Image (cartoon, rainbow, N blue to C red; front, side, top):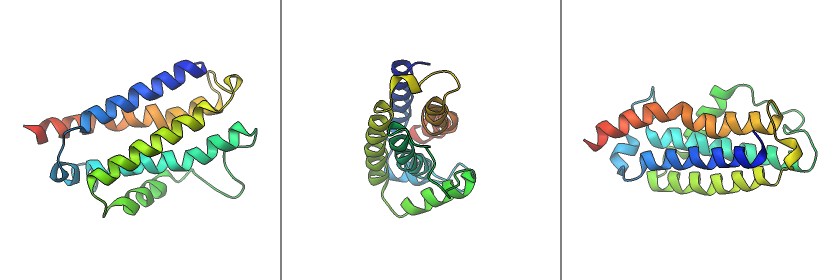
Length: 152
């Protein structure tokens, strides 16, 4: 996908994620249903990846490697747990606000990367799929199922 298609895909998938959780109350957002996680934990770990990948995209926009020297992002379970734990005591409203803020900065960082860096198999596309639109869609079915039951 080219830059514009990728950014459109990113925004659409994010909007879909937010639409599913919109209107859920604090109790529903905090009820554990996904292993040891509640919806707010899922959203917190997504925001955590946003925050982490903003730096990667900023480095890419400067022509640098996305991952800083000596840093390893490959143990995603450890990163996920860290991100969720960091926000666990926060209200669902705070988690959603952080998610929205982090997404806005994440999308701006992606938009700052040159058009020539986008395309099938290119690093920025893989990064945005893994930590962006593909990531949202990975969690969407479980969140939708839980949200439909919580709203009933």
